[in-house]
Length: 254
Image (cartoon, rainbow, N blue to C red; front, top):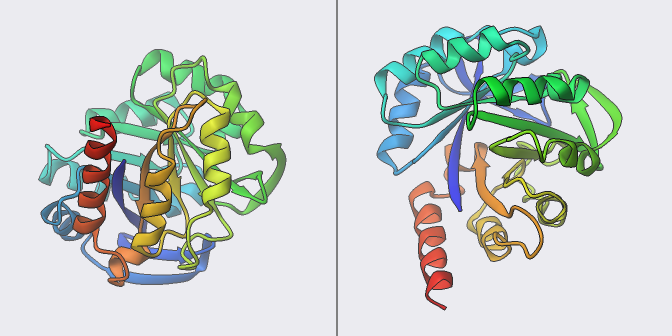
């Protein structure tokens, strides 16, 4: 299981929100490129970038920052979400050195777009599903739909989606612990690997996810995104990744 640091971009700064509220943000750095380098030095093997302004605007706003990170650290895999609503935006991000793009709101409103994107850019499309009480939210979490997250995830199984990022909005940025049961339920219900997000606050959350990383019937839990916990020092990135690596080796040996 991969531990993935999050860099959430708002007005060119690195911030964290509470439950997706733009008005409730904490600025952790005014230099996202330097922040990316810090997490790389701590052993990050992938970064999760979110253009928060873009998620609300429906078009990239912090794309220049994303390009700068990709240019400074070309060997570091990046995944980017927020405001990605057309093939042209995907093409520009990938050309800039991003490894995967995350389709969120557009995936909910127009699932067929995901199939089109996967066809055009195979192996480079991730779907972001954010939910409240199992129901999908869109537009930077501003609108909660009547779409069940598991039902929607199953629609993407034959499209070639690389992974699904599942975020429990109620826990995101709240340091209350990840919603393990909901994450496992999604991972068991679909063949697509799931990346957990929202509420990861301590090493025990990583232990809980790693313990069920390989599901019996689904794609399993491939990674965990963490933000506020590593910025505030409640979770040590290097130690968390080391634990997952050791657990994976032990599992493979049995």
